[in-house]
Structure formats: structure tokens, C-alpha cells
Length: 303
Image (cartoon, rainbow, N blue to C red; front, side, top):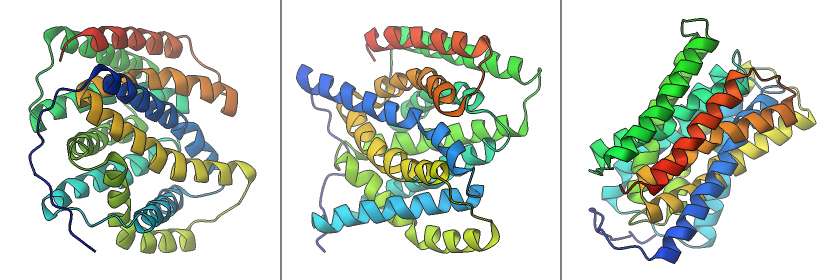
């Protein structure tokens, strides 16, 4: 296979308005796909253990991604891109799915969805440190307001003390934000779908034996829900959603794209009621609505 040669440092290029619009649409489609992740994971846990679900979803997604890479004869990434791909693999392919799956054993999808509303701010912070972006004060004020609403909700729902599930979720935020930041940076020079595809393939030497080991120790009860949940988190959340997400980030910038994810908690709340029959507290939709207000502000703020 040929080695893809490209500059290691991204070049700042003015993005035309139509491209920005299309990038926003793609990022929004990614958010829509991600909003189904927690309900699909809850379905998957009906028939799989947490370790089995995470490992098998990674293997299935890697097979889809690897098939696309082979079919299109995509050359290997440049050597300089592999460290960034490793961060994407560790954060997005392994860390976030595993930690959130462990959290969902004891947390409702509604609670987890609102906590993960902190992801946009976490991603923006890491982006500022890693990529050197400098969003405006208005941007930061709106992002911090959304984060404050999520923190208040978490403390109130947990009775004033964080639970083990909350700790899993906060750890998931950090590793996922790191993966998003590196993926968004790489997507400026490497097509977004190739970023996640190579990250998935990179995990195969670990995910295949992990899946075999987990399946041998955790019981499996195949049901329509568990199979549908597994297929969605593997193909929808782990591959297709990330493809359009990274393409969107490359077009409109990591901070602005990350703020679109403030809509994800509200969407997940809708799915948790429709698909799982969960009963929402008044605080959940109010908090989700509050962070939605921040989207309009951050998208208008020049970053």
C-alpha cells in the first residue's frame, strides 16, 4: 500500500459559506446519530455484558471501516498521523464506549445524556490547548453557562454527591473530548471518514481478543432489542455518525461543531421516553432546554 504524504500542520483556509453550511449539516447529523447511542446501549445491555458489548461493537465497526478502506484502496496514513489516530482510537473507539456502558448499568439514559452535555465545553477547552483555537468571550460565556446548568443538574439528581456512574461519565467526557479534538485536527488534512476508519482498524489487535475473552465470560441472550442496539452502536454511532461528525468539524471548526452537541441531551431524552419508556424528572428537560439556548449564542459568536 502506498503511504499518504501530507503536511503535518494544518493550513488555515477560508471556508466558503456553502461549505460551512454543509459542514454544519454534517455535524448535526453526527449529533443525531450520537443521540441514539445511549438508548441503543441500554438495549444492547439487555442481551450482552458491558465488556462484550463494547468489544463486539468495536470489531463490527472495524470490519465495516476496513472493508471500505480496502474497497477504495485507501493508502496508509502518513507516519506523522499515527499518534493522533491512536488518541482517537483510545478516546472514541475504546474509552468513551466502555466508560459510558459501565455507567449505564446503574444510571438512566436520561441522566447520562444530560451529564454528557458537558462534552462540548470539554472539547472546546482541549481544542484551545491542543489546536490553538481562541474562541471569543461570548462563546466561552455561553459554553460555561451550559456547563454550569449540567453540573447543577448532576449534583441535584445525585443527592448532593456524585455516584460511581457519574465518575464514569466524567472520565468518558475527558477521553472523548481528546479523541474529538485529535480527530477534528486530523480531518483538516485527512478525509474525516478515514480518520475514524483507521482508528477502528488500529484497535483490531486489541478488540478481537477482547471480544473473544468477554464473550467467553459474560452470558449472551440474543433478543431483538439487544441485536438492534448492538448493530446501531457499531454501525451508526461508531462509524457513520463519526464520519459525518469529523467532516463537519473540519469544515466549521472544532469549537463551533462541539457546541452543536449541546442539542444531544434533549434528543436523547426524547429517545429515552419513546424507546425505553423512562419517566423524566422536571429537571432533565429544563436543563436540556437551558443548554439548547447556549447553542444559538455560541453559533453566533465569532470564535
